[in-house]
Length: 386
Image (cartoon, rainbow, N blue to C red):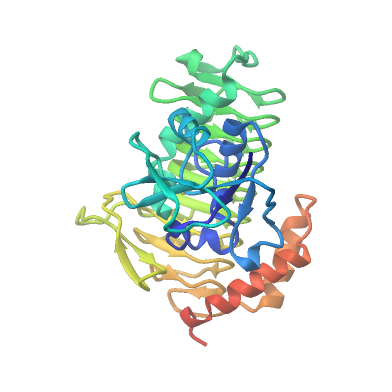
């Protein structure tokens, strides 16, 4: 069977992250959604995404293809249901299309009702609010039948059975408390001395936690991320830095982002009211139903030292934020400035910075990457003031 993960209706609700990646490349828990499906299905999946992203993430169709909405996270019940799906059938739950075994979706397909619980990443805030259960699921998936590296004697560790340390990880004189959730320490990662961690927590491969950091779960630091200060229930996708003091809470940070020293976000309104977030579909502010909701920041965005973000702030792709005061709680993509006003962050300058940042990780800003950013620049032009 050939499995293809497609961008379903949730794709637009997951902007700005899905401006620059398919839904399946969103990280929640330890793994990206695609990595989860690859592990559960024991095969490589391909992706069906937006035309301008398909050059980097092509679809690989074969004679028999089973299409799965990438916003759904796999578990054993869902895998079993998919394995029983016959050609010409679709798997649904009420009005939700989960998967279909056909060349294209149509009304003629026979509906098979899925009655078990589903976990869906439908909105940006689901990434942090469902991160705890995703960490636990990924932890069990990745560590089943395997033995952790030894916990160093200098490390305070509580509930050791739910702590797993991969090969090459370094940690000394830190505290790992897994009594409230699993703690996963990835390959060749580093936890510096004085760090306090309360699970659920995922430190992915080659990521670094700096000295004296205080991390409350459920939190994920993706591959090659660096983190310091105080973090509570946040997800950093990969290759992003929050390396200094300052608070980040109930937030999602994309790839190639940098949070300046002593920057803080609010995650609770002064009147304790539910938080609203910018919604690209309605071009207004949507109800999250959450009392705690912080910063949503798209790929390649940066903020200077001592930046302050209000509760429920959405920052688009390739924004550069600086200056005193609170910026707007919606910062359009390719914006340059802060509370005093914004100008357009021009593409040549965006490329120049991205090339320097990526070279530091021995990576290249490819022509395909540039085409994607150019497309996003055009898509988001209506939100910027000239």
